[in-house]
Image (cartoon, rainbow, N blue to C red; front, side):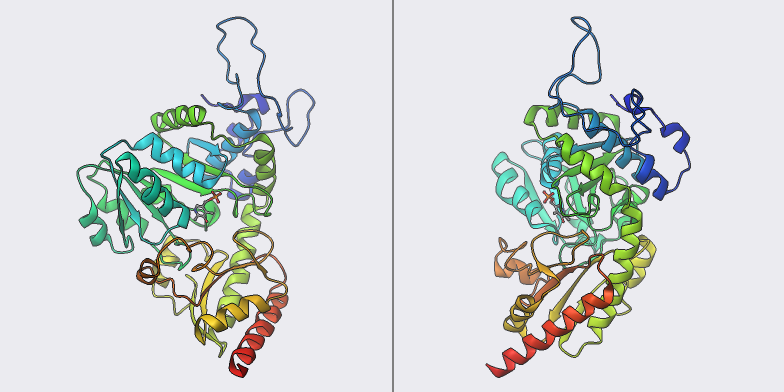
Length: 404
Ligand SMILES: *Cc1c(COP(=O)(O)O)cnc(C)c1O
């Protein structure tokens, strides 16, 4: 079931339209009754039925809601795919994907560096239901091929990976999976359809935390799954209405608003992040800088082949180890210490104690997450103001640690 028509279906006139246009018009045209240019929030639990047994798109908002459907149309059109489904959070989306595609005895292969919640879901929830997961370095297609089993149902890849920005070559993964029935899911949260198109490289389903760049304003939590396959979409509809994990209409409306500037924002996030990455790489108090479009990034060529730009995320190690890193983060004034990413405000995170604190030290070391790693989500402030803040915090941290 698709639900475009009630909002004035403009989608047919969008064939061949560019990303910037799709982000603005992909959710439908003016609302047909009043002509409201911005579709309203359908804040309604239920929908009147003309007679018993009538077929209609909307019956109860745990199954479908018109505002959520408008967002789904927009996300599908941005990705160039047929279907999208939105969920309460990114983790609700990943959980629904697991419930729709796995059963007891299924095997999953997952990138070894992924969002911490994805690891928790696979290792501490799904394992209790007889789902086994192998974590591998998917940046090496040979290791992926080795990890595949006849009962592998799902391959879950995140690229660039959180928080080390390690890339997985999606085309190479697609080739490894060519003769294997496992579905390939790609978490595209860090780049969005504006900068990377996983489905064009072989992904069956694209996974989003819309909480991040898609909504982009640090105002919501949400998730989405985007795909071509109608049967998979039907199974997700069934799981979503059964487990009750649909996104709320208010969050969907805010996310539709955010989507209008997504391509613009991703361009500026990328410009500023590249500038900050270069500046950090030249700074005497900084060790390694991880940013895909930096000349020193080991997978730079893959980044340029696979991504339209570098995105807004980078990570680096402050020289002097853990104490200096912590002092640096505590000394920032404009950049905010918080657990989110992908919004107008620049946010700084300490992955070992925050997003990846549930991994044990051995697991973190193996995944390249050192104790002094700092993750920066470069926002939309003027880059010179960001550099000034980073500079004063690096100076304060180095001085304080040297004095102690
Ligand atoms: C935040 C995030 C998630 C989880 O999304 P929530 O909306 O917080 O549930 C999944 N994947 C990546 C890459 C993320 O950054």
